[in-house]
Length: 202
Ligand SMILES: [Zn+2]
Image (cartoon, rainbow, N blue to C red; front, top):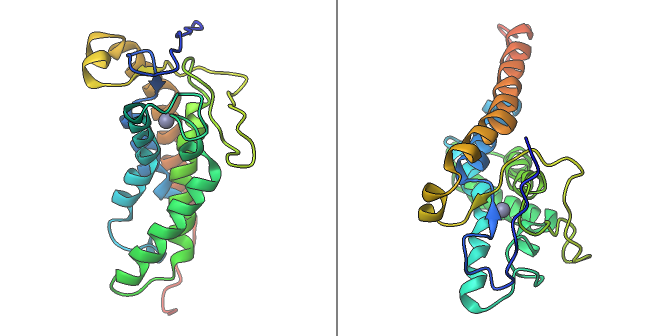
């Protein structure tokens, strides 16, 4: 897959600002559930997983307030960082666990949600356009990309997406996000099926 660079206007008001699609992030959020013990998670944790895996891209609203792309609070800035992922995951886990019936300890849900939220910024580093990701914000405002960037970047906005490279983007996400996720889910199911059942234990 060739390198496809996008020009980056710092006001971000055009289709040239970039991200993977919400589908790609959501697929990873659902798939990550497979590697956690289901009995330790509240019901419908996957909905929270999808929400926190997509949430960082709400930072595109920064453009509406005139915050430049490269600003610490611009798109792919603090709200794509590992610290923000941890804050969102811990907060959501504490609230959701306290309301679940029966009550669950929030640690497992927090770990699952952290994987979902942190995966967002990390996946973005694999895209072939836009500015890099401030993974270490607020300790460093440096924008990072992975050395290998196979995922075709998606323009922001449904219209730009559909009129633009929708097919190419979805195909690259299927290849580089969808297939690895399927492999992880199948592996987790296989490992679980091999575990001896503790019949009679409590
Ligand atoms: Zn993003």
